[in-house]
Image: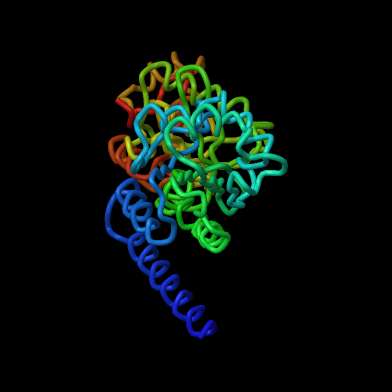
Length: 337
């Protein structure tokens, strides 16, 4: 009889997990899918309040995304810095392990979070789960609160933990960008700062960071251009206006991917190409670059040969179409205008 009951319970759990997986794959926005998945989790844990918050790497805080059952003040306060410090000490923010109040060493109900937020709102138990990307980046946090101290049970806690990767994938803006643009560096840019979203190092990237900030400060949030890094490698940079669904407090997202040297063009030749795409004649190109008209004329002849086009107009069209543009004197490439 006991074995039969365990089997039935396992079958029920598998059914709920399958339902959640199906809801996570629905052709809806990430936020709508996250809400649908959280609602389905009620079949696993009879929570009275459930919430998903996404990590904002720019503001370095959690942003409420989905709330089912919490009153708005309680949910918005749960992940403020006053309580995040307590979560951090418990290891709740950087370990993908579900934790109930009664799992906390000592007396979990003595925690500030329980005393000031959970208990006054009428909850008696609950769990928290850090949502991390496969590379260990913070993505978000799940909170569930119950009015019955028996829940979540150990089984319910462990099943919730199994759903961590599914929930993290729904909330991870970097993962969604990577799906669209492939592997590469991902930057979030404001008017005063640029940060790597993919967890990569900023070392040796000062010039690109400064260029991205300069463009955004000048009102440019969408552009495509070539870049040459400090080691001499060539890259393609695509700046995109962030959508509201990404939930990032920035003006632009930059996707930086390795790219071959285009048509064996030198950096100076790409500057000439960019200025031609802006409609400059040779004299104005020479003035902008501080070169002689004869030198620019020689550059143009070599460029036409390398790119295998016959006219400046054809070169300009090819340059815009294939992204053969660079930033000249801090100005954005012609395609931005």
